[in-house]
Image (cartoon, rainbow, N blue to C red; front, side, top):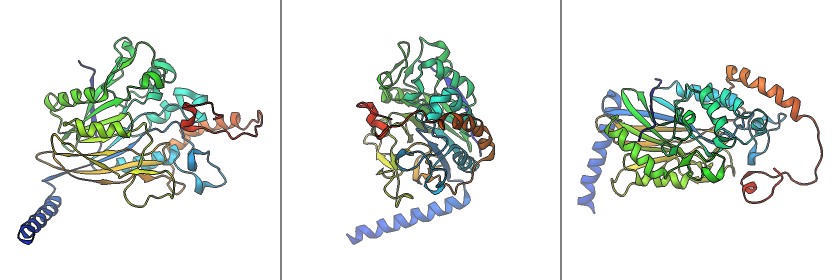
Length: 378
């Protein structure tokens, strides 16, 4: 069942053990019975991605380029990513969320800028997306063009102040309400406040504290919009995601990005890469409310599609269970043919340019985060 969106513009011992076992058994039986009649539980699936960074042609281990002669060593790719996303989105009560940083990264972005990102993103079955810091790399003017092109997808960010740029302000919502299976699902966006130094938002765009902004908008969604479940969707990194989950009582789920964090429960599908940094989902206990909030992220570059299954009490909207894992996209994943045709246009032009030899070097052309700290050859 698909979700419909209603965007809102920015606004300001034994004896002891025996009964315990009985209770647990009783509750488990009740849960199974409820699951069968379908009236006491509400199930929600969130598929999600973050930090695609324009790696639409796939990527090899350690962020190296794919070798077409060895497809088994290649992961991700927009055509296979789209196939899996569409398959998952067709399942009941499923929403698809993007946590930013679609801009910048691969040579495709260097050549085609916002245009290729817009064309690829527009065709993804997304219900909402947040901003990433890299969306401002070519200043707000390119972000505006991108958002106008993908106006079928609500863009949410509660901690941006774009009042001095009305054109951009009109294209961004603090939050959105998605109607899913009779529930009102609120999605609140946020982006790292460090965007001012990490990118080029310009003098007219400022950013406030993520936690304060998310809390304020989540309260409004709960009180004024009568949201049943509230998701924080943003791009500030895993540590900040955990902090939001712990401190903002109104939030039920956090879907994040920015730190390219790989979370996984069990044995991951690829050995030694990427490094597992926590459980999927990471469960955070709120000290004030005593409720538990799942936090998820899905690495980067389109290598994985996050897949989170949630079970709520249908009457109280209390979270009862959260399970899942990111799904690996590799050469065995089928390609979406419609997306393949769209991407082929760019790939043909790309190969004409990049297959021209312009020079040689005996030095390793390194890249990645090291380039933020010192001179590099990436």
